[in-house]
Structure formats: structure tokens, C-alpha cells
Image (cartoon, rainbow, N blue to C red; front, top):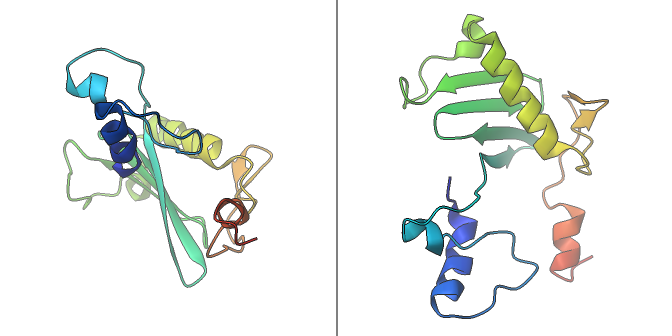
Amino acid sequence: PVELRDVMPTLLDCAGLPVPEAVEGRSFLRLARGEAMPWREHLHGEHTVLGMSMQWITDGHWKYVWFSGDGREQLFDLQSDPQERHDLAAAGTHLQELSRWRGALVQALEGREEGFVQQGRLVPGRPVNPCLRHLRRQAGLA
């Protein structure tokens, strides 16, 4: 999957300019040309409202959502349910997919300053910072 953070590196690549090392995205120019190249298997995103976050991870087929406040989980099959109306986690079906995507989110959140992951498990109820310290440092604000 390609995401917004990949646009700037791709434009720089098109212009023949180097991509700064601090940039998290990657150029997808080769993919756009139809060339094979190693690429990420999934996207991770998050939204924070009133001190609680919603973490999600998707490969375009499956989408797993974890609510950090209460630990609630959702799983959607985006190919058969693109509007996310049928929560497979709540239905108790697709337990193997639920476990696989929970594990992928654990890997994505491992080492984060909020402590969302402890001993290889998601931990609900952790306080959420509106701006993570590493981002504040990068911006010269810490």
C-alpha cells in the first residue's frame, strides 16, 4: 500500500533529487512504472481524540482496529465489506486473522513511549500524548 508520506519522496525521485534521510516515506516511482520492488505489507495509522487513540493497521484486504482506551478490537474484511459495517471481531469469527493482525499491530507499536505494548501484548488505558516526544525533538520543540 502507498500512503501520503510516500508522495514527497516520489516527487523528489521524479526530479532526480535525493530524499532526506529523516523522511519516513519511500518513492513509489518504480511501482508506478510497473517495476517490481520490495514494498511494505501494510499501513499503520492512528487517530487521537480526548486523550484516547484508535490504532489501525491494514493491507487493503483486512483492517484491524484497536481502541487504546478500553482495548476494544474490530476486524473488517474490506473486500467483502468496504464500508466496515460487519465487525468480525465482535462476531467471534476469523479468529486466526484477528490474532495475525493483532500481532502486526503489536510489532508496529513496540517501543512506543506510551507503553501500548508490554510483554508482547496490547495494553489498554495508557495515557496518550498529543505530540510524541520524538516528533517534538525532530521539530526542535523539545
